[in-house]
Length: 240
Image 1 (cartoon, rainbow, N blue to C red):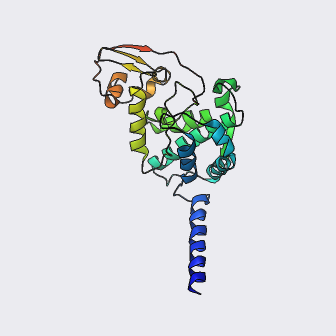
Image 2: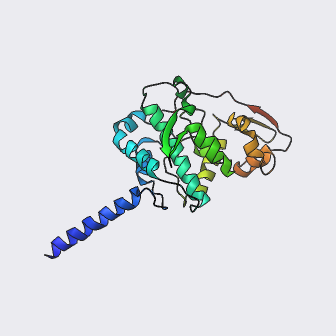
Image 3: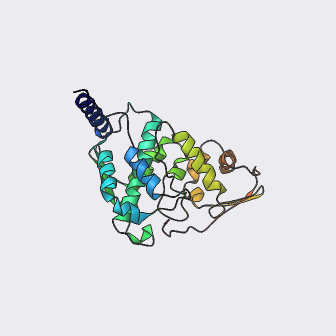
């Protein structure tokens, strides 16, 4: 009899934990499914196994359905909202590629950032909607190192889901890693050859000073205020 009672309790608790993760109006966002997929299919270097994601399409679709059924609200903290939308952007980008894989570049897809890829809170959203209408308006330029456009010249896709608990640590890590990657940025005291991300979104990086001021927060090299700035070509090849 005791064994039966224990089994019933375990099953009950397990069911409740699942309900907590999938409840559409729950203010505690749980990105466990996405975290597990990232750990499984993204290397420490940010290389993405799209075929692996394709083989786990049921899990990816279940996560996207959970996102679609969630309703980010004003009661959420900024960190919670930002984590939700960065994860959504990255998962939807993965889906966009996986649905057409194998391809050699996200640009093989016609107007990929304008395709309506999900409906959340009764709004049909594209990747551009999420990036420009939601994330950039949060005023944190580090989001550009958190969201990944499936390309070689992009910041690397972190193999850990963002959460309200880890978002500052993970965005700082992503920012430092991106600037330290000499395939994407070459930084010396007197000159910097930067990713075009810094050109495309220059306004975002100048909210609290100059671009050099921003860079100096996340590099080990102290860049001179009058350093020469140039920009690298952008490689849109797939990050696989």
